[in-house]
Length: 126
Image (cartoon, rainbow, N blue to C red; front, side, top):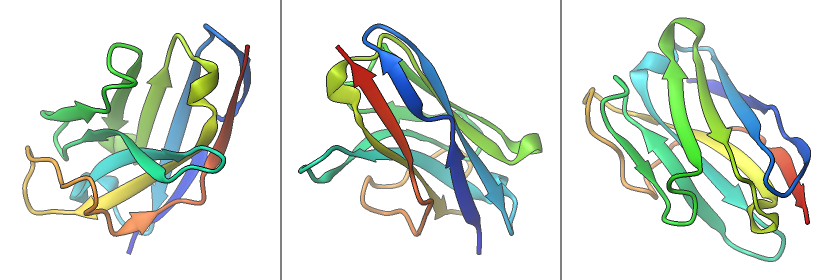
């Protein structure tokens, strides 16, 4: 079973950038499709981005397309979320998640992740 630890959150002004990292341990992250989710205060958890095992496929929520980029470095057992042009509405706890899958190129369903990290807080001030 994989353990996931997020880092890189913090306080940033509107229009700024942050890069979140998700470090995996216990098993190699290359065995998993990976995703990022977020939960804003008083709201349901929502999908942000996903990446396939071989980085050949990615998916983004409409609200972050063109601003956020998901990537992975399987050699470092780490997944990243580069967030640019941040807005106050991006304020949330961000979670990474892992889906064990045989398929290298496909993405899981947005509700199909088995393992979750504890989250990292991102706060965007206006």
